[in-house]
Length: 142
Image 1 (cartoon, rainbow, N blue to C red):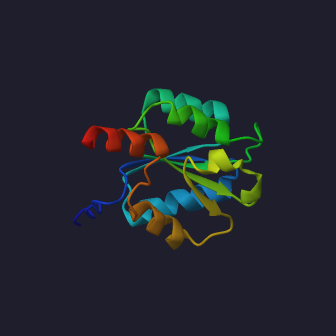
Image 2 (cartoon, one colour):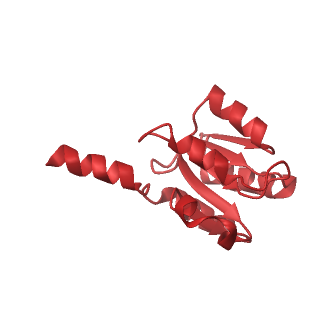
Image 3 (cartoon, rainbow, N blue to C red):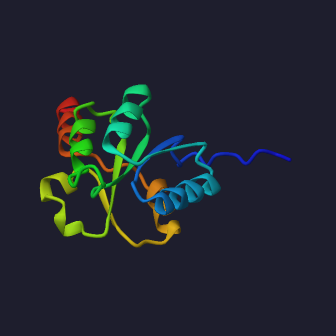
């Protein structure tokens, strides 16, 4: 049986920070079926931070209301300190209005419930540049 080739636009490594086991496994299966070779699930903030210390993913799908912290976006703030090559962030929440506006601007907000195909489509879109990356790019070309 031939191995399925990985679509070039899909990330190679996705970290899923999700405390609901069913949602986490559904996301993992969706991404695996789409061709993402490495999907890691972390149900807590501490496990997510440990995973980030081990290996930087290409994308983080981040539930903002975790059982151990109600401000999962703190992980996004930390990730953005990694600089222009930081992982892409997709916030996953049933209450997008709870995410502070300046935090929501660090990534893409995906409102639960959503169809798995929506997540896969989002992963194939080009990464949005943050304001700092856009400024650096502009200064480099002037």
